[in-house]
Amino acid sequence: MSSLLDQVGGRTSIVDEVLTGDLDEGERLAGVELVGCPLRDASWAGAQLAGVRLERCTVERVDLSRVRLPDAVLDGCTFTGCKALATSWSTMRAPMILPEPTTWTDCQLSMGSFSELDLTGARFERCVLSDADFDGAILADVVMDDCSLAGARFVRADLTGADLRGARDYVIDPRATNVRGLAVDRVGALGLLAPFAVVVD
Image (tube, rainbow, N blue to C red; front, side, top):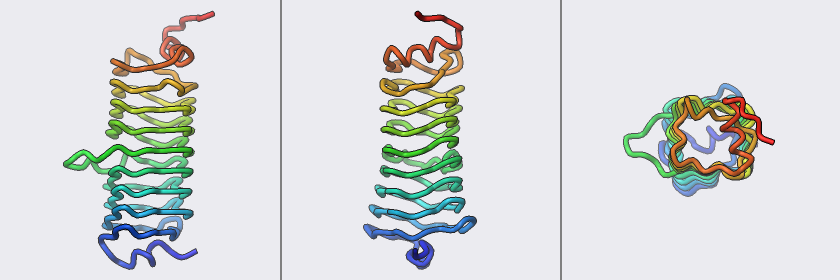
């Protein structure tokens, strides 16, 4: 498999180009803007994307586990069939102009950190988010459909208008989280009652 660094070739902006190169553990891609690029069938596990901007990119079947993202920006991207275990998304830069929402579908995102990140309007479909950290994250209008959230943490998170109908296995303490307008189903409602030791027969 060719290297992503070779495919980028030192360019600072790439538009509508299919990229399938790998990044090895510890390799660093820095200061490049990818616009409308399909990124497919690659492993970037343990690599670093420093100051990289992904705008309207489709990321398919890429291993992003433990990837470091200092000052990176995601703008209107779609992730499908990706694995991102223990990835610290929270190191991404907050842009001056808020980006378009990002969508994750059929992704394994367990142990990822989204702490303090603004995910307004993002969509997660059929994702596993076990032990994910959403502490202090802005999750306004986020949709989590058919997602497992076992062990996920939501302390100080803003879930205003979020839709967790169809999500499962979560426990959210309304005393420590903004849940105004949060939509849940009957099963999910038990996750809101759990911190109060309420027994529901």
